[in-house]
Image (cartoon, rainbow, N blue to C red; front, side, top):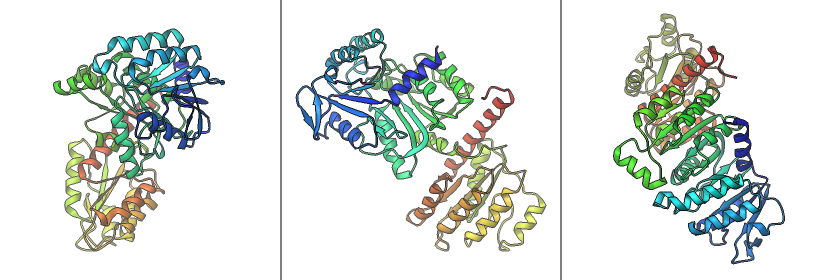
Length: 465
């Protein structure tokens, strides 16, 4: 495998200087129209050419009858035409010497048209064209402002790349992420994976300076050894979080009808993922919780300190941490004395620390400052629950301010509804991951600790550059 060449091929697709949308449309209720709208309204500064033999103008832009009629070179073509027409369009792209193609069109192997998909693969291979898809929603590169998807939601700029077989998963993620203020570097929807697969995407993303974390949704695994060897290589440098669908017999059957993928043995895939250093998750929420937290400082160990304005939530979070292999140790006697000096007499200075419902900005700030100085604590979970006594803003500001001072990871758990919206916003914009339940924050903490241990071991073995 020529890693350098694969990176260059993927770079031409993800960072094109020019794009042709074949099947462009002015009707935004159609897929071709939505893609055209998103591309033209994006911040992309490269050249965009519209191709449709049935019109000469779309949104006031010149339209070409075919990709071969475009007078300039075309790096990437995105194809949005009926499936039976795709081979003909691919032949035109080959004659134009297009180097990368994204096929949005559905109606290939996922519905039993294996021969049609094989025809596309043959044309691409003979012309040296790399293909993403078919049956996908497109690609997004926030670094250059390129949006070649048909979704309504815009991607916020960030450091997490999302690689997915499912286009709907990408659409739903974009909508959810906008509400959660979570940013992304790249979206790569692989669809049926007739050519470009997860390993190709990983070999590009590991060298992409904007991408710090890689989240992956996988349905089927075809070249398993290649994928897991690539994961092993990449995870030494950047964290990978994986959600594998089709882990039951009915789910595997559904995966086959969705993207034409064979799900593979769950036990083998799960073992291989974990051995590669990637993190295995069980649902969508857990996937993106882990992705968010992996941008924090690494955890130097498994010892967690928990502080809360509600004793019950501290206890439940302690239970979840313990179940997941994290430790919630007793605090040193000197630290207990320091806490008792300013906390109310009814507060609990054990770990978890119950500061009582009156805990406000100054209380959270002092307790956090004390905990951040402890060598015996590796990770801190501050908790706030709306009780009608203190608004969530002050405690959130204290967490953000103290978090900037130390090198220990801090993961917040804010519980409530409308009354905690401002506090949650303060935490997110301050770079503190915030979760809505004890299980979520503990699972995210466990993910961070697991990857931190893997990374530490890789550094010790000299396998990280």
